[in-house]
Length: 119
Image (cartoon, rainbow, N blue to C red; front, side):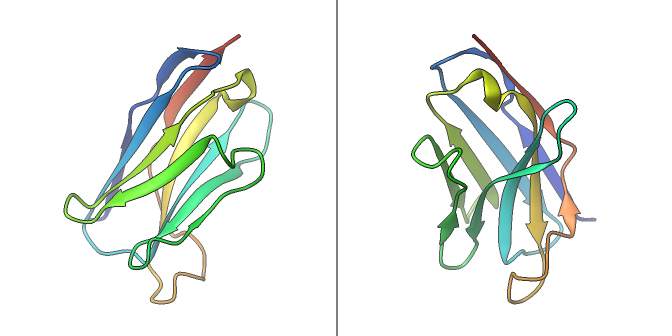
């Protein structure tokens, strides 16, 4: 059974930091990403990492503040979030791409973890 389990969300003041974790089990993945969805907004891409090479991608909105990394032994992906802003408030989801090339979309999703940044 494939599972992605997020943890690490919570309430933090603006300017603070949080680290989210995504523990994967059940199979291997070629790429893992983080997405977020704020109330009334569409789901937005936050970061991704290729499992084998470690290549990372970020949108401009989080570049320089967020860092995605993975621990291959623990099968876990992390999202370190620094200099948090009120607009980072959202439910954060971990997602994984099981295709060999890591380029066909995310087919597994976690349950989400709430991040709230108070201003």
